[in-house]
Length: 262
Image (cartoon, rainbow, N blue to C red):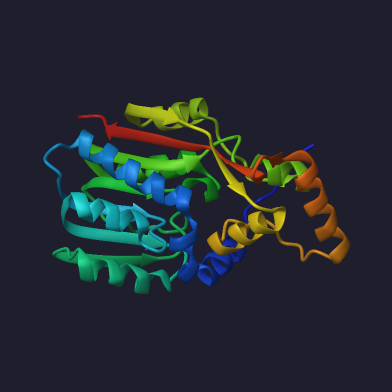
């Protein structure tokens, strides 16, 4: 039976900090999600201008770059658990400057103070790391102006199922229906869709390298023994082989919501 454990935010922070320099070159799925999320936002606001934007989980700047490539933003607030990600964001801002920029370090769930009267709140491939999504949606609702947009991607129930099948541990992913229900308490839903993507790798070892380089192994606390490592590799090859080697499943979800007008 799959064990869903409480997220260790400090461990997640350390893993993502370690992979900041490699994330952009290895997170192909998250890059595609950032592009599609940015296009979705442009469709929601054809004028492509925002006064005040908050990004939750800004990381290496994948979404920031895609959004600023397409939209005009006056004030950009970026939040991330990893304080060192600020250096990556400044590199993006060298190419796509904004009038005003603020970095909000730390866990978004622990922050009492956030900018108010926001036009747009965005998040790419981050919300699966939060403990209390209902409280997050309520907090964002309080800081968006009426008619403001919350647009995000996250991952759903089939995500990286190959890892959880062998290791019997995984995140508490929400289904699209559950996300719609939680967010629907505060917002009007305008876009909700999901897809499954299968990445292929030459070997199980290549899968593990991919996971390490993107930091998404932040859930696994244990250090593997040689026997456990060999068991994982053998089981992965036995259960998840394909013509080109082995595969890994991603299950992205895309949502756009609007704060109800008063």
